Length: 302
Image 1: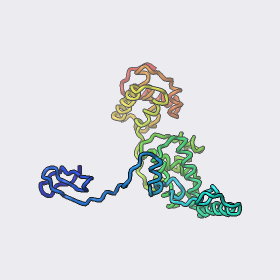
Image 2: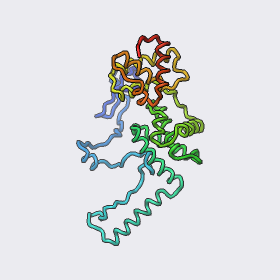
Image 3: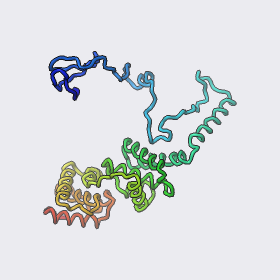
Image 4: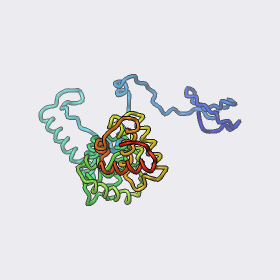
């Protein structure tokens, strides 16, 4: 259905007839538009082999690839277009061409930087199991950082970790600074400093981290049921309404909520187990636990 109006009767009940290429009003039958062009492919495929044979375009452009995927690759099989083997002289010539082609593709300092950074980006994202769509967004943000000259004097690894952390926070995918530090081999202080610098210089509006986003992940890693997850979510929502999370780390609040929910639902986990999963100390969980228990009036025995 279209959101437009019929010029004849004013009805919004517009139907698109794909067979005739027409827009028709269902109320009065007026043909509003004709000869509509179908921009889809004119062929069908029933398996991957047919798709590859009939498709006339290449793979989509990807920012996580050095040349965005728009690059010519020289085959290393050592055969010509008919499948015949090349002579040893021709093969040696082709290998030299491949070598110089690779060197030419990363000739500038920016290309060399991107080559190292995008490899590191894929490695850290794979380690932290970050979705592909977010990796693409992080690669685009890193390219903007390079273009503005913000990486000068900073470790590539720190900028990569900071970019990934920024994207994860923007799209509400919970990854902590501790996890970024573990994956990149840097300190939280270094990544945090670089993150704040990029956010300030690129004028990025990063939303505040909501502890609720950590609940499903912590509960899943602790093998807790869906009931515990839901109870933990309710505790955090109530804490937010009461203004109890202001100035508190979101991971600590989420961990304490999961700990309390486990006690209430009879699926007890120790503070040490919860702390290891959340990446916080047992002292933090005890403090948040006492605050939530007291302020929300939760009747539970530790």
